[in-house]
Image (cartoon, rainbow, N blue to C red; front, side, top):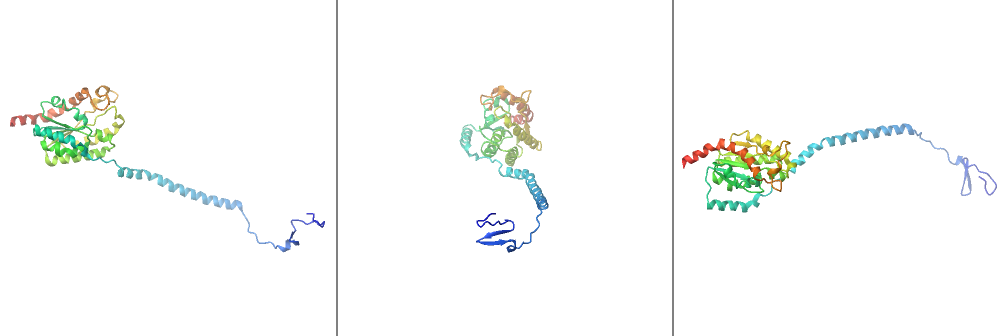
Length: 293
């Protein structure tokens, strides 16, 4: 470097600070720790790799335990039945009719949702000479049949019950297991007062409007069929098979415009499925009742 005095100073050997000329002697060298970038990087990489593997294992274990967690959550959040009291008006109508014309005791009570309610107009003829007391109430489910059994089943002291429920239950997101458990509760309630009463469960029907629900309906049907097989007082009646075409889909000519409720041809299918079973099992008791009068 050329100074104003014409003197050259080498940067590497000396410097100028506040007018003082200094050299390397003014700054003795310090001990310097050797730096090995390659070796240190490898060590860090090994540590990071081990940490990544450990983290991955923890994450994998967490993922593997998710199904169990999901099942527990499903159990906790299982859909519950709603309050059944909203059918009070329908119950009062049945009770008023009973006061005006008391139904005979020892008959067969037909209870269930709108599919049973829609059969009211022809069920007595379709199942003649059996004595039928129709007590279907539209929109009901298995829990409501259980709830109102004290008012529209047990007072008649029936020898048998024709039950159709489960259709609306599935539509309300009630699980097949819960439907079956509620069916068991219905059985227990009936048999507590009427230990010899026979119960005929009509299988949940397939329909066009609820076709996506059919797998769950089949599951419920299978569970209830298995339950019926345990007790000779219980009978599972398959009304569903006759409602399916050759491709296993619901027949189109047996439903009303809503594709849910049945027209007369649909009830003819029910009659053909139910009548032979009831006649074989119940006609003998019908004749006994006639002889006792």
